[in-house]
Image (cartoon, rainbow, N blue to C red; front, top):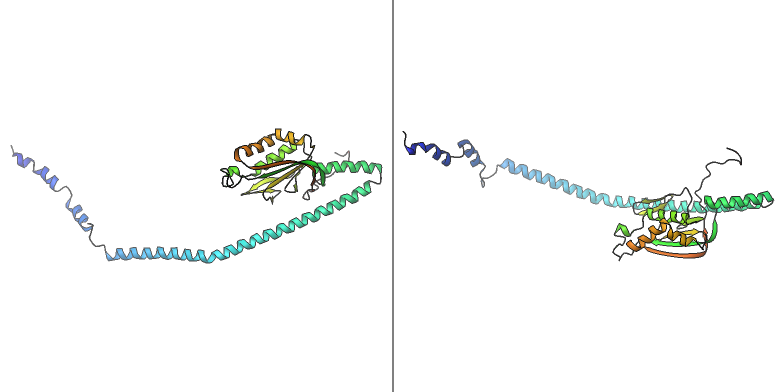
Length: 274
């Protein structure tokens, strides 16, 4: 039987030399504090220099192109303003020509009894189609975003008037019996589109400026009360109560709404034709 000390020699060897000699030698070559190779240091410095050069070039290029981008943006805005002004002038001219045509048409139709009947029918259709200027009593709504110092102000989207809000208001006015409706002086028809574009609201792709003034011609005795009870009225007054939007309503004895100069004749047929 061997000695007890001899039987434990293997255990002592494992404890005192736990790491293989080859691994120990490799670890010694990578020991902390040992100087790194010259090639590795140079490669690291070159990589850092290239990275810094790239960042510098990107910054210089951005700074050089910034004035050009700003100039292009300013020129584009100027072109938009010029085209908008030109479009407004053409719309005004078209409206004046339309009124002249209507006046001449009425003069011709007034010469006969049948013509007078036809003129009355055309005037009624002009109101429905939005192709003629109309006057009469009605309701005016002034709608705007919540005040800036309010908790639900424009910084909070809940306090900003959206396209869907104006859509609800207009639909509520139609449901309340409005005969003609305009938003910021733009006449609405069955073909009118109210949409949102970023933070702007457009009517037939024409941007609206705040505050939004909605005018509706209708029976002064019932229009306002029926609008308040309509879904559009409930929507609007809920915005005022919950999100603190600005809302002013007033009955007006006489409103004048322009014709929609953008209306186009799509088809026509003689009476009795299919």
